[in-house]
Length: 55
Length: 516
Image (cartoon, rainbow over all chains, first blue to last red; front, side):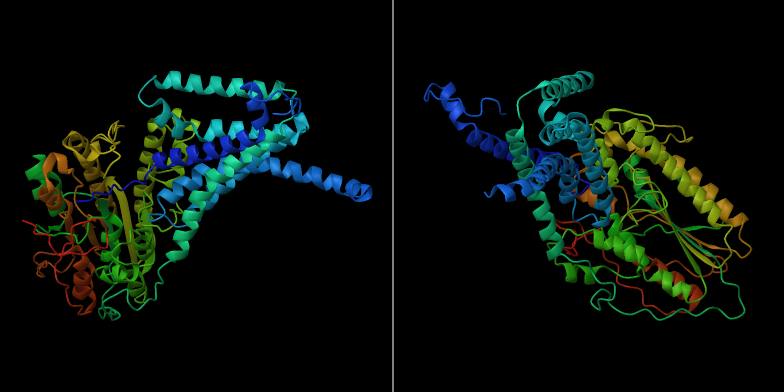
């Protein structure tokens, strides 16, 4: 038998999932913006002068 | 670009950048409220969301403007405002799932604040331009917010509010009552103590004898229905059926058997059929609740944070304020105290209502003795920590339920005495629980849970009608039909006695309940 509590559902589990989704999206954008710097750090590319003063 | 155009566009571009930098903090701020509402969209009316949304937006904008004034950089202001908003609103969400049962609460807060300080210092001191950070935060914030916002919008569009004039709602119209000729109309007080178990249930499952309270009621002229039961397992549905004098079969037909829309039941309570029928006789209708159960979009007489289960309270409990007590805190001690205050206030309103000129119909609901369990029998504060979230339905919670029930008994007797003392014409007083105790299958098994759930207290003071027998096997849906027939010659047929066990969805009505 399904038991429904009278209280509202705090819903933190779904909120965490949504936060993770937002986090992945942010990481994806960050990856795209700093792709060249990442490659430079990994020593795949040498020129990394662009965006040195930008986060 | 043409240099002249570029020159003219520069201020607009700068403004656009600043506005764009505001996007992330605003969306981060509104996300907790939208997400929480989306999780509970079947229980809540949309207006409940507006105040938290407005507060969230104002907080984010003000923070952004302050940082913009200080640092003269939209990107930095947006990043800092986002950080502050997350630090304030997200603590509860993050601490439960990430820290879990690891470090103690004190360490968790210290760690959270330390993280905030480190990030804030880094943002303040950095000389690096933060435009890319603005883009990253903005995309993250949009993705964060878009899913619950879209789900919520879709749900509300697919599930418009039920029209109160929908002809499918009720099985039959109700004829207008007739005032007895030459007699003064008695005041009618309908007091609904939430989840107050029937005396035989208290004896059988709680090993508790409620006869002291019941005898006090009998001395005041009350009659106790020994075999009353309610039709449903939800407070809102039971109260809606009682004050509309009909089952909610029509509502189920309109919403569909898969619907979980309880908000519509609240709408039917707030705009019920009983009140206009009595108003046609000259009754003044007064609606009092110590909680928000009988209101569609919040109780206008109490603070939106007065009750432990209000939307705003649960929203704020997830913020950093959920770790603190006191006037602005939302930890258990603070929310419990507000709840106590709301109960005392409601009983005070009930007492005040007896001074209003009659005839009057007073509908009064209190969440007691339903949890949260916050009252000792003598009214002193009680603390009950519901560790699992279901402890209040288990055997471990039952002693606390009984303590609160004993306190409620005192309040109800005081209320009855006040009503009787201030009534020039003997009043009708109906004390009827919406339903019985909500128990846990693990402790009791399914049959006992269903048995307890539909058996609530019903005690009636019916002046001048001592010779009129109470209907046998009374269903709470028929209580007002019986009272109206007895006093106002309405001749309403008593509906068939049915109880519908709660299945997976509240509007799945299968008449399988066999109640001993």
